Amino acid sequence: MNPLDPSLEEIIEGIDVCQKAHLNNSTLILLYAGIDAVASLEKLPGEQQKFSFLRWVNSYLLPAKQLACSDLELYGARCGLVHNMAAESDLSIQGKVRPVVYSFGGASPTESQNASDALNHGYVAIDSNDLIEAFRVGVHTFWSDVSASPQRKAIVE
Image (cartoon, rainbow, N blue to C red; front, side, top):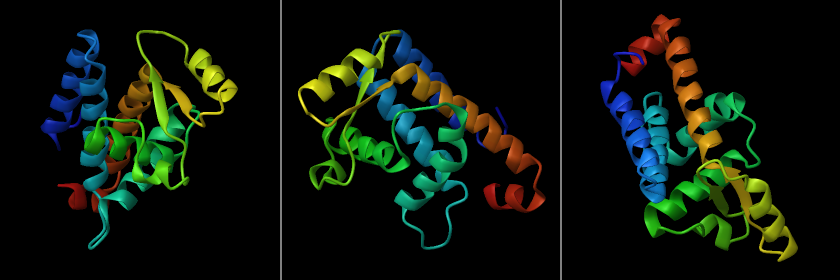
C-alpha cells in the first residue's frame, strides 16, 4: 500500500476482518466505500461521485479481474447496498442495469446465475472474492500509476 492514503489501507484491512467473520453486507459496504474513496482522489472539479466511480472501475477494477457485470451495474449495486441494504437500486428499478447478487465463501456464482436466468429474474451473479481481489489489484495498480506520474501524484496528495 502507498503511504499517500493510510485510511485506504485501513479499509482493506476492515474488508479482510469482515470477510473472515462472514459479515457479508459489511464486507461489501466497506468495499464500495473503498472504491468511492480511491475514485475520489482524482475526482474532477464539479464532477459527481458517480462518474469518478465509473472511471476508476473501468480503469482499475474491471481490468484486474474478469467480472460478469458492468461498471454501471457495480455502481447500481453500490447504491442499492449502501442506501437500501438491497440488491435493487434506482438504476435497476428503472431497468438501466441488472441487480447484482454475490456468492460468498468460495461458492460459485454460476448456480445463482443459472437460477436467476431460469426464473427470469434478471440478476447478475458475481463472486465476492473476485470483486475483492479486483479491488486489491486495482488499488495497487492505481498507486503504481500515481507514483509514476508527478502530476497525478500532486493531485492525489
